[in-house]
Amino acid sequence: MSERVSHWIDGQVVAGTSGRTAPVHNPATGAVTAEVDLASAAEVSTAVASALAAAKSWRSASLSQRSAVLFAFRQLLHERADDLAKIVTAEHGKVHADALGEIARGLENVEFATGVPQLLKGGFSEGAATGVDVYNIRQPLGVVAGITPFNFPAMVPLWMCANAIACGNAFILKPSEKDPSAALFLARLWQEAGLPDGVFTVLHGDKEAVDGLLTHPDVAAVSFVGSTPIAKYIYETGTSHGKRVQALGGAKNHALVLPDADLDVAADAIVSAAYGAAGERCMALSVAVAVGDIADPLVDAIALRLPKLVVGDGAQPGTDMGPLITREHRDKVAGYVDSGEAQGATVVVDGRTADVPADGFFLGTTLLDNVTPEMTVYRDEIFGPVLGVVRVETYDEGLALINANQYANGTAIFTRDGGAARQFQYDVEVGMVGINVPIPVPVAYYSFGGWKDSLFGDTHMYGPEGINFYTRGKVVTSRWPDPATSSVDLGFPRTR
Image 1 (cartoon, rainbow, N blue to C red):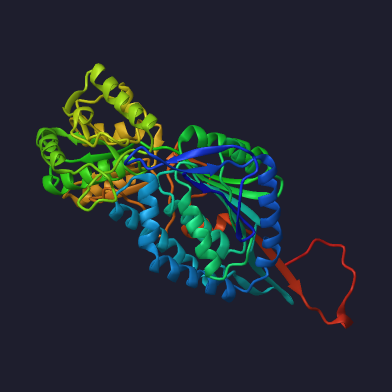
Image 2: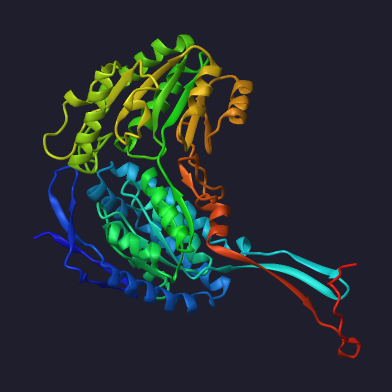
């Protein structure tokens, strides 16, 4: 019998009562390994009530107490990273080393949050008026929720929960039902670190659970990472119910390769960024924009590298790329290759015919040349191991192509020219830019997020903007007058 994956409410595993479940697969074999409970609206209310009770006491915990829990959680996560990585690989399919890398980047966000005593320091103005001092403080929101995607079942929850909890909130995690077990592993680590029961909750579910969180009056804020249509829905539904929302959507990340670029460096970087985690990354490079004479040698260099990649079970040593998350998604990605070929792209390397394991949800790497902006493979976020090459004659043409795209998550430029790189970072209308860096995910003390249809809301994720998102500001104006000098004054308050 397959394992049962249930909710985590008030510090313990709680079996679902909705009667609805969903299968969890090992994408490398196609086998069903677990059934995950899907929450009903009533179960959402139970989880929120537990979190609300916990939030009232957790916000009173001193900054030193919160920081101590964060430090303990950080140590436990560091010690047990390998165990968590195995869970990620078993349910997502990414190779073990990539899973470890995901956890390491999540760990950075925990380390940032341990500095909450410094991060929540306010300002103070003595003597703003005669006998009057003014200062500002930041306070937690209460109950906040995170709705996270399948592609980073450990890292993205850590982007959210570390800052939210450090700021004094109770956090409800609704992970992807496709790979839910990493969330429960994190819950147990939080408990072992000394976090009070109810401050971290895991609620499994589908749209019913999502809608329950978006409309519940006691949920103050919602964070989301996923596709653009869902991000737009999350943002509009949450804000219409009075919630603060940050919703990160899809991407079509371009790499602009100038003629002076180091060819080997660019080709290595693009292959790594396009095909790592089978392309199931919102920061994957899915379009290489080749400027002028670099196009032919760039395509040849990328094509030369692809046969060397080992596609297989991510748990096995020596594997470079694992399967896609579901059979349906694998077939959808293969369909994009079909449409690209039908619409005139040149199939240089064909992942549909690659020698990959027969079991599981595998697809080989695909390289398409002569892609144009009108093609479906260019317009849509494919989220798979497919790289398209668009040829342009000039830097200006390549820049215009990137800036015209509806998505604006991440981009990169490959060049030896510092002036060109500096001009690109100034000109490009994208939220995160890499200069000879293929996946420019910011370190934890900056913030993550794109522009245009890649972000709904005005706050990026984690880092300083994450602290602001999970708190609200309050300004206090105080005076302690001598009672003997007190008098009634109906005039407008003056500072001079």
